[in-house]
Structure formats: C-alpha cells, structure tokens
Image (cartoon, rainbow, N blue to C red; front, side, top):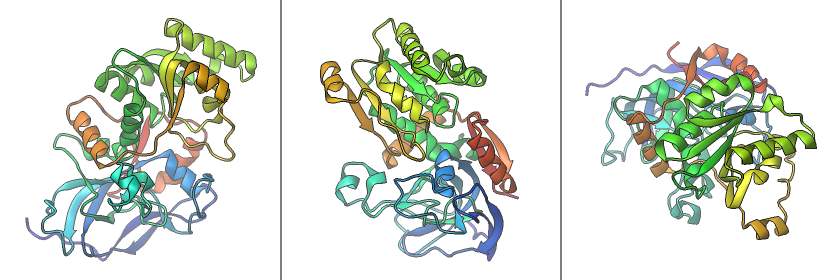
Length: 368
C-alpha cells in the first residue's frame, strides 16, 4: 500500500482539570512509531464510565491522581498508517483496521499474564491513564497488542467493544452459568449491561434478567432481557430491597439466578446482588463503585458456606477475549447501541453520564 501522509499535529481531547467533569480539545504533536509500535489514525472512540472515573479521580483503586492534560479514552478504532522497526513479522500492514483497548500493553511473561489476566500485568499500561488514550486522531500502540477488526463490523460499532464488549464477555465466561440458566444484569440499559444481555442471551444461551430504570426497558428487552425489572418501582429502604429480591427470585421460579453480573458502579446493586443467587450461584463484580464501596450485604462466612456461593472479580478481558468478542460482532450476535458525538461534546457526554441519562454507549467521531 502507498505511504500515507501523516500530519505533524492532530486534535486530541484532554482532561484539563482532573478531579472535575471537564475536557478540552487541543492540538498536539503527532508521534512516530518506535520499535515494535504502530501509528493508528483513529476514527472513533467509545466513551466508557471508566473514563469518567479516571477523569474525576473517583476510583480509590488507582495508585495516582490523573495528571493534568491527560489524553483520555481506551476504546479506539482506526487504520494503521505507519509501522515502526521490528514489526516486519507482526502480520500487520498499513491500512489494516485495528483497535486499542483499556489495557494498552501487557508484558506477556509475568504470572498474571501467563494466567491470561492481562489487566493484572505487573507492567500494565492503561490507555487514557498515564498513557495517551484514544480521544485523539493519532495514537501509538504495540503491534503485538492491537486487536484486528473484522470486515463487516463498522468502526463506530466496534469501538465500544474494545472495552465494554470484552469486559462483559470475560465476566460472563467466569460466571459458571450454563445454557438455560438465569443470569441477572444490574445496569442492563447501560454501556456494559446492554452488551452483556446480547452476549449472554444470543451468544451463550442464558436466560437474562435486566434491572435498570424504566426508561431503559425497551433497550434492555431489545438486547435480550427475557425479564425486565424497573428499579423506579422500588423504594430504597429495606422493604423495597426485600421486594426486589422476591421479584427476582419469582422470575426464576423461586430458586434464584445462577449468576449476577453487576454492570453498574452502584453500591446498592452490590449490596443486593448476593440475595438474587440460587444455591452455588456466582456474583461477578465488574462495575467499579466510586467513593467508598459498601460491604456486599450478607457476604459473611455462614451465608457463603451454607449456600456455597462464589464471589468473583473480573477485570477487562485478554487478547483472546477481544478476538472472540469481535467474532460475535462479525456474526451479528453483538451490536453496540450508541449515539455519535463530535469531540467537542465530550464534557456534555460526561455530564449526561453522571446524571444517568445515557442509554447504551456514546461514540466520539474523531474526524472533525
């Protein structure tokens, strides 16, 4: 393929005042790929709740506050425009469409990497957190870690799958649920939840229960929720929680669900989740609560022993999970529900995210 003209500078969106909901479009120098790297002309980037957590310093699990003028984002898709030295045997070429994930790079040789837990790599680099992210028009990435995008999967559809899709695919795989089992998705109408419903119902054969606010019922059912429970109909006290638990169990025939995959950052969702489970059920922790998390209700040895329950943590998936997720998208099993927004609307997007007004995902069009 003929060489591509790469500009010396390009547009990026940065967190100009970390700790607050604030972003700014700036121009920055376009880097050149180093050894083992490729340069990607990104056309689209998903906007994830994790970006919100990084921008606002809301996650106590991160070791350092976010730096000023950090280029955020971690769900980018575009075309390779330049390859650095040492990429000759990578199988990549200019013009290939690839994606950048939450994990920008993992070493591949530490114990977590050898176990397939890339996000727990001792040398992990995170896109959009002390590594330039995907809210920009050109980005570097290690050739060994980009994800090929199949033909037939549009870039705007593919972008949110680079984190959201991979994350819930991995979580559902760890749930222990079998085809025909009931699986509950708190946060079913959100960026993670609507993807989890599709993968669970259409890709893995689970019977899905969505839990969210009433305005997200249509999206949840369209994505595969056999049962939808409207949170707005329940009070926030013990009586309301007891009624919610009773209704979830009634939907499953009285036994409870085989798994609950919490796809929201809500502390309340975690406080309720164990009570939705049947004997030997599994709670999969995915959403990261902001501030000080509350203890998971009834997570005491007696309850865990008598019901033989499991609590499993699941960070984002690995490279194999990414390929499997994209294969589902290529087969038409999985499709992102999203709205497209320009780069200069990112602050507004985050404000709507904070207010819980988003359904599905927002994807940034990086062409402007």
